[in-house]
Image 1 (cartoon, rainbow, N blue to C red):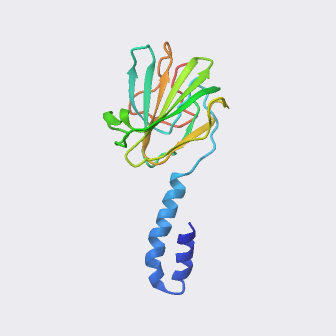
Image 2: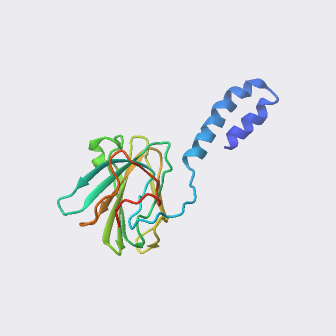
Image 3: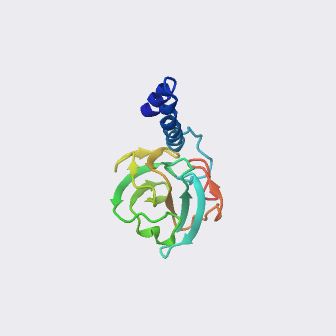
Length: 189
C-alpha cells in the first residue's frame, strides 16, 4: 500500500512514475478486496456454512457422516467461520501438496483439521490449501470456546473447506449452490 501511495505521489512530478503506480495501485486494490472481512449476522439453521463459495460435492462417508465440500475461488471472502457453537477440541496442521482445490486429488493437499465439541457431537472441519493458497491461518487453538458464525481462520487465495455433518443430519444444500460463511444453513434443522 505504501509503494502504491509513494509512486502515485511521485507520478505527479514525473509521469514516468505512473508506469509503476498503476500496477502497484491495482495490486493493492486486489489485496484489499481479497482480505476483506465483512461483519455477518448468523443464519438461523442449526449448522452454518463455514465458507463463502460453491458446494463442490456432498459425499456420504462410511461412518455415517456426510462431507459437504465448499470451493472458494480467489473472488470469495476467505475468512472461515464456526458452523456451530462449541469448544475447539483440536486444531491440527497436516502438511501436503498444493493442487487446485477443485481437483479430486486435492484431498492430499496441505490442510488444517479442526474438531469442535458441539451440541450435535463432534464436528470436523477441514481447511484445504489450493494451488495458489499456500497459507492457512487458524485464529483459535484447542480449548477455545466458539459461537455460531464466529471467525476461526483464514485461507489465503483459492481453496476449499470441508465440513462433516454428523450421522442423521441431512444436508440442506445442493452441489453448485453458493454459500455465505456464517449465514447459509447446511442442514434442515
